[in-house]
Amino acid sequence: MTVAEGLASPLPGDSSSLALIETQGVRRTLLARTGEVLSHSGDGGLTWSRLPAPPLAFASFAGADDAAWVFWPKLRTDGTTELHGSPVMTGEAVLASAVAPGVPSSAATTWDGPVVVFRSSGSQPASLAVVRREAGRWLPPVPLEGSAALSEDEIESAPRLAAWHREVVVAWHAGNGQVLAAFSADSGRSFGKPIEVAAGDPKSRPEGSPALAITESEALVLWSSAGTDGATRLSLARVRPEGQLGDPLEVMRLEPRALAGELGMALAGDRLVVAWQEGEPPQVRLLEVPLELLPAARERKPQQPVPAYSGHGRVGESVPATEVMSLEGERASLAQLRGQPLLLNFWATWCQPCLAEMAELTNLASRYAQAGLVVVAASVDDPAARERVARFTKERQLPFPIWLDPETRLAGDLRVQTLPVTFVIDRQGRILWRQDEPVQPNDPKLETILRLAIGSPAADTTAAP
Image (cartoon, rainbow, N blue to C red; front, side, top):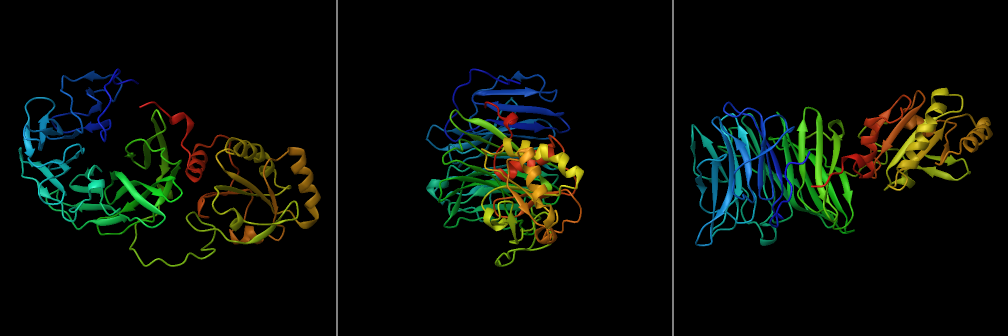
């Protein structure tokens, strides 16, 4: 659905936004800001009406008991910038007098009222500050601990804020390449010390503004990082207020300079969707990430070398380096395929469900070949059946490698006990998905896992911004 047309180009660093307002005074209203246009919808986005508002670059929104509020930086005559706030759209109030120009704020609603985070300015090093509304009045801004000393090249990186009841989290990209998050359990009155979610290293350095979502017990942080190979990686991790952190999950890998805008993220129940802009002209891309694939937050310990094989073929574990033979008589192993997304299927010529699913495996191999997916089918037929395996492969014109595992060495290491069994393995050799039953045609869950392993969004989720 089109919300607005014929828009002026947004200012550098600004981006479109969509906010849901639901309070005692404002019942389930969507506010969309695109360029210079502010629109609202009261029917879940089916119809939209334009609000009579002035251009509000870098604006954010949150709800209070009495109204929906908009927050935006406003330039004073002396060249400095203030943070203004207003009910949509009558009257306005100055909320902060020392605001970094050209940097969006971020706002959310708690049980005690709206909270806004923004970049402050002044003689001291730039930092983040929080302003909130309580008992019908705005309180003075309070600096966010640990957010000072931002470098000039990172000053335009916008902070992000999310709230759940009285839990509040702020995430931002610090000047030293870190991605930090700070939690509040009292609606933004006070915050704990920042938690390092990601840090730059010689091979990869976080950049730009993160995206943020919050649940009852933890936050989800999405960030981009640039590698020495020029590619941009989008990574996602869980973080808890007590400091526990989940291992980051790489959800997307983009070509050099392909990222063209801010990151976004939306969480609804157990469904998580990440969004970004790429290409020229920019296109909005979406990818649903199954939450069960995101490693749980845990106490951080010194990193230990990852063993070649770490378990019993479960999701989240690494795969074994067990060697088998290919149908052509060459040595083959999963270790040889490290760095490539992989679909591994175990089958046998005497297994009718295995033979029936070969058509879908062929379809997947064809559809995802250009994206780099490798499909391997490992036969566990006994040694005497090698000619039968070769004949079946030729008759069906299977377009993927056939491995021979007659002694079930690889199958045993992956705890394959029934047939067929299919694994999806990421570029790092980690199991993303396992299914101990036949692959079904057009399985949406499998499609999502494959796109996650490959780093490719769904074709039907592409839309013009």
